[in-house]
Image (cartoon, rainbow, N blue to C red; front, side, top):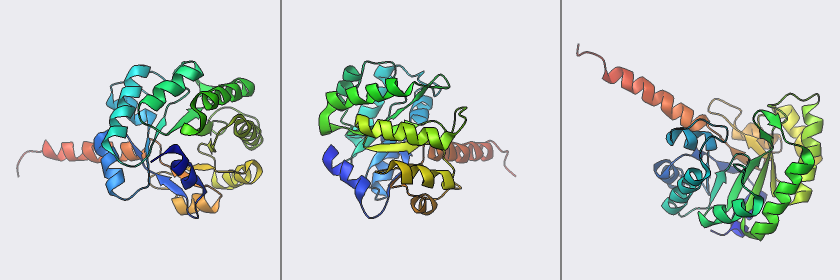
Length: 239
């Protein structure tokens, strides 16, 4: 599916729900379950590759992991690429498009601190210029997970600027439902809500204005918890 068709899924009558995958097997399961697209989780992919989250995965390994996932499914793939791994925007866009992905997340904090808004907007604009319409850009706004005096006001300011820079969707990650609604109303356009296994639910996020909903690392964490519990039972002595 082309980026144009994937972009259109952000404007449908119902939210685009994206359980985040971490390898070809999990991506196939997402597609087989009937979801319209597959999103990767940078944290989950990093851990599968033997790294921690936080731009610690070598970029070539992350791009290779995204390419394996994109080859494994027939639905569009959008990749969580953290803050771009320090790559120049043109190189980043070209390398990501080579993987077969048609979308990406780009977050606006590095090493636990928010990036200057103008710097981030410039980066997004240059990625857009390099990729043209072939990449759906989801601009993550980290004001709800970093020290900020007024996270809603700052999220609105950043969201509007990122949209002007060419972002297709704004992602105020972990915004409480009431504050997500304020951001959605003020920014306009597609808004990504963050769901979790255990809540908030897609229905609650949609009611708050989210048109795209993703699960981040929570699906991988849930699966790992189930695996840990299974392994404990396998080690029990026969009774």
